[in-house]
Length: 90
Length: 415
Image (tube, rainbow over all chains, first blue to last red; front, side):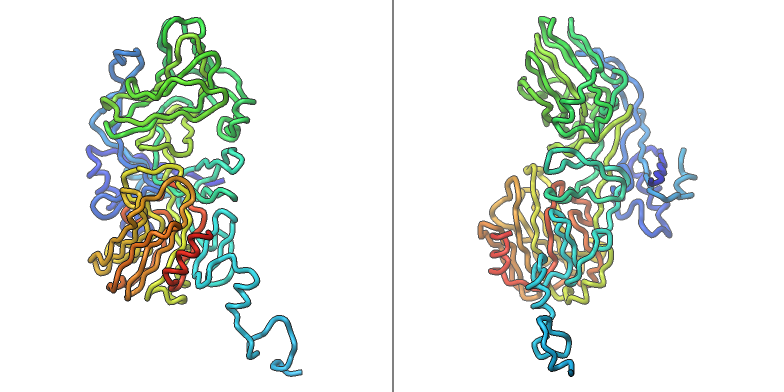
């Protein structure tokens, strides 16, 4: 059974998330992010907006979500821990 | 008796008749002649420079999540993290990262949380439907046998459900669900105007619709006509123009990470002399086309976009070969004919003197002398350094020494 370690990283923009993961990649055998906008999409969930409950859908009454302005990404490591990512978690 | 005079069916080193390649290919040559690395995912066979080896010794897979893939019997199988999704008589699925944005319990629900009913007279519940799920090959995902049921049989107008979880942007999305109906029709929608036609489904079928959400808050939806009942499970909302294998959710969006499949080592590459050119014989199997983006078959590179050999189908679905040396694109040539659905054997050849792309139908794109890239030290299958994935099944691939165009075409016809 594999040990799955998930690190949730928060920032105000996708660019800021990318820069943080580039910095966290220094000295690592496999980078979390590189170049201008590439993420290791085999291990990093691409940046997505954080949401909070919004007004009900006018057509169906179902709950909706609205962005909070914060961007998130998750780094998921299999059988591996990363102290740098752990320290970056908000 | 001296070695030289010994009589044997198997010539040994030192005999005048010793020809190891002939022996190898005559006896057990499932790989193609000159193949330095061969992976036959369809038949679970792998070899490097003429020596059989295990999948894990030939290729390394990184993917931080599980992966479902349907077998030849239609039954989905589960693959653990960092394990290639490969099934005999199917092949390997190599795809990009996909998030199912639905946030309900789309597999094994225990309540209707995250599923909101609308319509007067309809009744939403959780019921056991194990036999029908098994008949559809879903028993290894929907392990509890429980599904959602919307009974709209007593209603006089349309009913339906909204799944929690929104698109979050207005890029094209595909909503899908496994659904069966009783006594009426139903459809799937992206809330709420993007919907496929109402229809009946006697057994669980994957019903899907693709479109552009009218705003970021839109999600997946099912509509059930008056008088009908729908049983449904594994609803999925993905930012794609096509469906990908199911992604189970448990109260939150869930991501299936990209499959990064690379050669486990590269010593074989230079040993086979492939730095000065080579060929690739490939059988992809496309379940969907028209993605509008490049879909990589393989890429040899130095780890950057500055030196590479990449075979792919381009944004117009045309098989193409791209060679970049020293940051300068040497060739970017595509067939005039696009691939369609199903198995599409393709052959690619390249060298300093030129090369080709050829398909089974005999369509050819050739090119003349180029500068070859140096420092090739990485082989990716089904993905590129730029992040373009195959998003399809790969049945087999042979990375070979030089193969003449005519031989490549002959292989494509018979593969």
